[in-house]
Every structure is written in structure tokens, then in C-alpha cells.
Image (cartoon, rainbow, N blue to C red; front, top):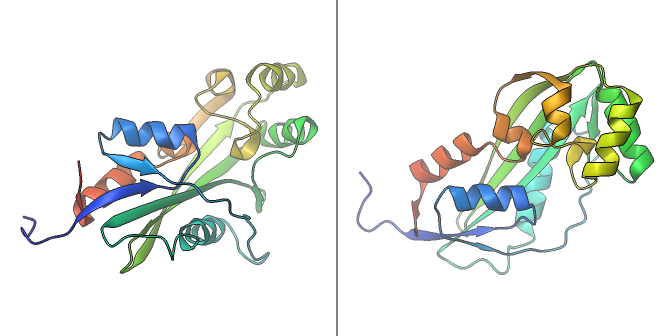
Length: 198
């Protein structure tokens, strides 16, 4: 039972991702979108969730001077981890083609970290989902890139798109994590740790 004196927090979502914004709408939380341009650079020695943990905190730290006493800031970062390498958003069409061909007929990890920050503290959680693609033909990859243009997505694909329907043979873990946010983990963390302004 929450103490009546507990602070009620207003959620600030620092994400331009339409997918993450939609998830928060579907949570039925009141929230405000607040964005800052951040150069997403991380130390080369970091691997897997170390990268997304670092970047989600980096995004949150940009708000250090502007966070109000009753605000809860949420930032997030997602990468595709494959062959011991981070695959972010593709640079261009050719890069997207090469990324998808490398994912073809193999299993990769989708890793998302979420940082929850108030003026008192910050904490990061993360989720890992394994995704297996079937053998994608060149024609299938070209069709997908031309018609769906997934150039704003880590790993150059959206599981909710056509490529997910025809090319993904197996998924182990959270589906929504692959879309961009581990919704069950985030919702439970929020409702267990904060009194929210709904």
C-alpha cells in the first residue's frame, strides 16, 4: 500500500520514436514528450547491454539541469547485437541491405535499455530478446527496403513490418522489446516504484 505522503510523479518521455510513444499511450499514463539532440557515441570497449545501458543514461543525463522535482524522465536505447557487434540504424540503403543479409538465416539479439531518472536517483533496466530469421532472398530484402524504408530502425527492420511476417522463424523473449520497448517490464517497474499522475 502506498503511503499517502508519497510524491506523485509526472512522466516525461524523452523519445522521438513513434513506437515508444504509442506504447505509453496504450499504458493509459499521462505523459509529456520532451526531446534533446544527443550525439549517441559510446566507448568502444562496451558490449551488448553495456552499450544500451550507457546510451540510455547518456540521454537521461542531458536533462540534469531541467528536470523538475516531481518529474520522472524515461529514456531508452535499442541495438541489434549480432556476431559480437552492435548494429544500429543503417546509414543508407546499401548499408541496410548488408545488415539484413547478415541477419538472414541466423539468430541475433535485440537489446533495449530503459533509464528512469528523477532528481534524486536514476536506474537502468534492460531486456534481451533472441530473434531468428529464415533465409532471406535478395529480392525479399530489396522489396522490403523499397516499400517499408526501415532506415530509422536498429538492425534495419521492424518486426511488426512485412519482413517480420515473412522472414522471422523464431522469437525467444519479449515481442514488444523487438518493436522498441519491453512493455511488461517497464509497466511493472513504473507501477511498483512510483505513484504516477494518471
